[in-house]
Amino acid sequence: MTALRVLALYPELMNIYADRGNIAVLRARCEWRGLGFELASATIGEDLDPAAHDLLYVGGGQDRDQAAVARDMAGPKREALHAAAARGAVVLAVCGGYQLLGHSYEMGDEVLPGAGLVDLRTVREPGPRLIGNCAIEADLGGGPRVIAGFENHGGRTYLGDGEQPLGRVLSGHGNNGRDGFEGVHRGNVIGTYLHGPLLPKNTWLADRLIELATGTELTPLDDELEEAAHASARRAAGV
Ligand code: GLN
Image 1 (cartoon, helix red, strand yellow):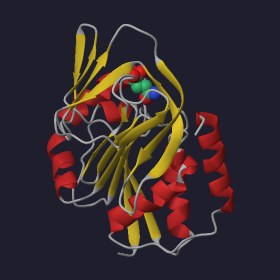
Image 2 (tube, helix red, strand yellow; image 1 turned 180 degrees about the vertical axis):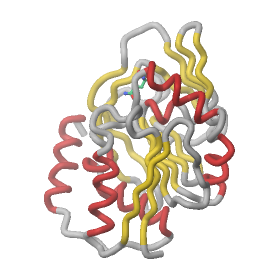
Image 3 (cartoon, rainbow, N blue to C red; image 1 turned 30 degrees about the horizontal axis):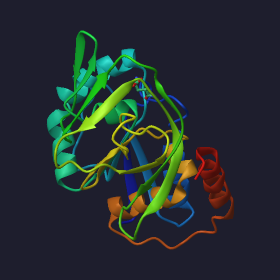
């Protein structure tokens, strides 16, 4: 493998909280190691070739943008998304994108369909938005590590029986503010509520995703500044 091939899904619609910084970090960490980086995008109505990408990325979104995206993910792109996940492509979805990985996102009378890549449902329940710094403990191979970020979501997400969360909440709300879990993790499909953006704050996670997507083991980088950013995010979350 000479390049990481990334597909940004709906980049103009699903990009709040500077979530496009996640792509910038993937690019930088590949290029610093002499690994190629190719970026493509696909938005509503555009084709998705399931064999053409190693990592598919969907960022966070406002409810109104999610509605149009949901119909595209659950409709024309559904089959290709499932085919990409089945061949082991990494699918990383943040917040609004995460909510659309599951079966549905219920917002009052409106029920948005999801891509059905994982067994979960999201419901906009009465009650405050779940906002604040958050830290979780997750194991993506190599033992438990901390992922730190910031969450802001009105939807509460419930995993189906047997579906694994991405991690255990150390501090913050997580999927629904009740069960102590955050995100979802099935094979190489990962969903999380954590913004930050996620990967600039957790560069170990960026590297792990590159490894999973390319099937290669990465050499370490000099990460003094990145580790300071991670420590600061952990402190903000109180862990
Ligand atoms: N619109 C969704 C919610 O409020 C997701 C928000 C987000 O991506 N931050 O639950």
